Every structure is written in structure tokens, then in C-alpha cells.
Amino acid sequence: MIDIESNSHVHALAFQLKKQGKSLCGDSFTMVTTDDYFICAVSDGLGSGELAHESSEAVSRIVNEHHEEDVGSLFRRANEALKHKRGATVSIFKVDFSTKQFTYASVGNVRFVLYSPSDRFVYPLPVLGYMSGKPQKYKVHTYSYEPGSKFIVHTDGLQVPGVKSLLKNNRSVEDISESLEIYTHARMDDLTYIVGQLL
Ligand SMILES: [Mn+2]
Image (cartoon, rainbow, N blue to C red; front, side, top):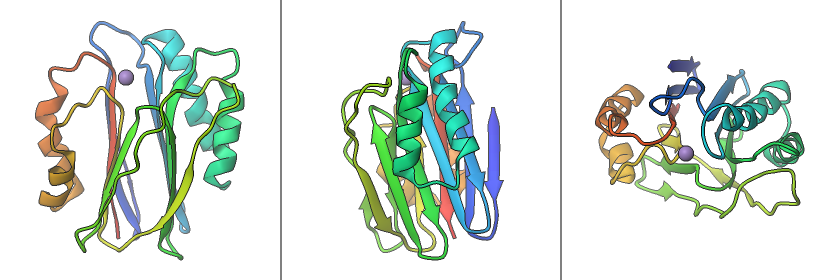
């Protein structure tokens, strides 16, 4: 599955493959773009198959229904939505085009890297655990970004040895996606990534 969001401020591509032999994907993603902001969420439901899908899908639904809210509030809503479900690891990334800032928060093993044209990386360390409706610690960080910055958000089904150099050495989102292709064959898990460029 491939999905593209594009306007004059962002160009992003999402890619997803199910674990082999499963009818439902345990990962979910969503992207919403307005004139003012871009928001995306990537989540990995615990385990695989239907119950994993139910959890990760709940996170995407929250973000779709409340995308105008800030990341902290979306995290609280997502956590609430995961009560009595299996649970999921979650990352939410929201970009404000007018202030040239973005906010990122994550629980668990969904990873995020952003590369700036001035050769700076933003590479938040993962917070261990997962979201399942229990009181949950997470850190919401806001950073500024330079136009031209490239980013990736991905689940652990994508194992790339050099994700930083991949962002640095590829000029376009499509080039990055093409370079990721070889890492999508030998997967043992559901696999989701969003690559994008802020303009
Ligand atoms: Mn996974």
C-alpha cells in the first residue's frame, strides 16, 4: 500500500506491507495535511493480525478525528482509546508550517529521524514500552526545522542498517523510498514507513 500527501509545504509518502501470511496488518498509519500543518501517526499493534490491527487502527482513528489538537492531547486520547485493547507502540509527528517547528512524541519502538540541509540530525531516543490505557510516561519535544529537511517514521518491521545516511544521501522522497525497497523483502513482521520532505 502506498499513500502520498503533498502540498507547497510538505511532500510525504507512506508505504506499508503486511507480515507474510496475515490477512490484516498490525501496523497502522495516517497522514493529514492542511494549509497550516502536517500530522502523521505510525503505530505498531502488539503481536500481529486482527488484535494488533484493532489497537493500531484506534490510534490512527484518534488522529484523524482530532488532528487539529496538539500532540500531547492526541497522546492522551490515544492512550484512552487503547484501554481494554492489546496495546500499541505509537509515534506522532506534527509540523507547523508558519512557525517552522515540529512536535514529536513516541512510546515504544516506532523510530523517527529527521535530517536538515545544514547537516543536523534529530534522532529522539525511543521511550521503552507501549501504550495500553495505563498511565504512561512520554516526552513531547518541539524542534525547529529548516526547509528541505527530510524525515522518516518507521515501525520495527523495517530494519535499515544506515537510515541516517539514507536520508542524507538521497535527494528526494522517491529516491529514499526506492533505496528502502531492498529492505522490504526479508521482513518477519508488518512493515510501515513514512518518508517526507518539508519544503
Ligand atoms: Mn512490529
